[in-house]
Amino acid sequence: GIESDDIYFSIVPPASPLDQFEQKLVEFVYSPPMVMPTKGFKRQHNVLDQKEDHEVTASFHVVGMDDLQAPVKLIGRAVHPAVMISERELQFVDTKTNSSAEITVTLSNHHDELPISFKASSV
Image 1 (cartoon, rainbow, N blue to C red):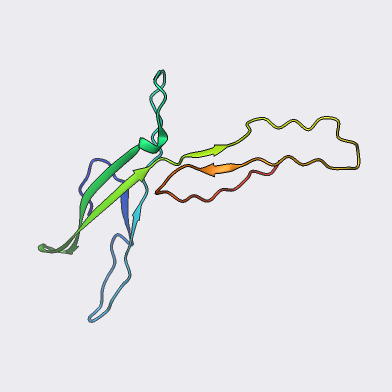
Image 2: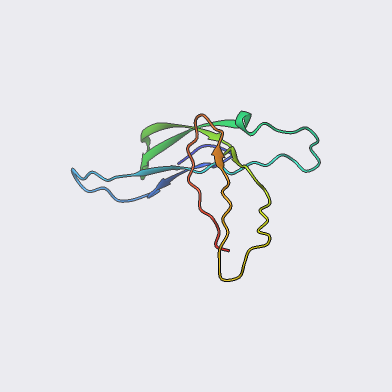
């Protein structure tokens, strides 16, 4: 199992039989939560500086024989996305009916180590 007070890692499957000479793929998942500044915090946070390192040890045990185990060190770094949009309010004024108007904005990722994917909500 994983030994930590804050469980950000999981193993899938967490348990399974393993036959003679069988090999099985095991997936390690790292899921750190988004930590927001506490309410009432006056100072502006630089989201690029918000990083948190996590380290735990997972062990695979042979059921019934706890002295037979294979430890694995899991290390993760949680970083906060830094996405900016060039305009926060878009006003479409004096647009003729049965026509269309366009406004282009820039969406920017200001992070040097975290690529992102974005999805616009339907309007």
